[in-house]
Image (cartoon, rainbow, N blue to C red):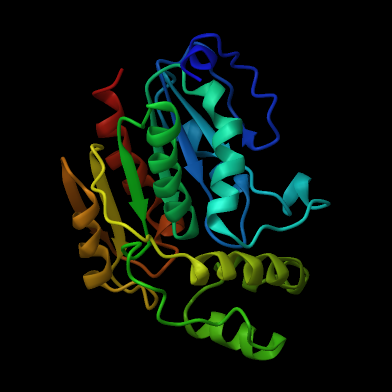
Length: 257
């Protein structure tokens, strides 16, 4: 597998990876993992907000956007195993992971899997709007009826405002959201093996789903540098505080360039 890294092509032929602003000469890459119910388009503009020496690679899960004809996955470890094989050839230069909500758990488990299977890991791990992985999700809603599921999502601020404004988007997003919520609700990190990766955790001060206490517990999974930064906003502060979050990430990335 190490040889695969050394001989890697950067053409991004994998359907799991989307690059909206290709930068083949970039010094490092940031792989961005979407939150539940979303796809790579949520990171479409990130490349324009980062220096030209950084390439943004958005992860594209099955069952959404251009992969909408594929089956949705409901098991996080299965998803990570498929993604691990696809992403490995593109880890041929310094890289970091950023994941929001469900994406944070995927980024975390992928970090563990890559180290165990290939001996590689990101130079930094950014966790956003996700409680520590060894704590089970306290509000399980994925098996509720359509109306109850929608009502529960609204109560938890679990649907981005731009989706709520469009009934067609709600109809499209709900099956994906239900599948992704099953991923989150069925996932628990079975063993605490602190990562030798600098970890930064982002949280929203008005997030009804993820408490400050659950964010703090990520420290148990960090063997080196750990930081917790709070931003004004609900579960989707990633959208309302995007500039500040990208600025915080950029400070870490500059050290890699």
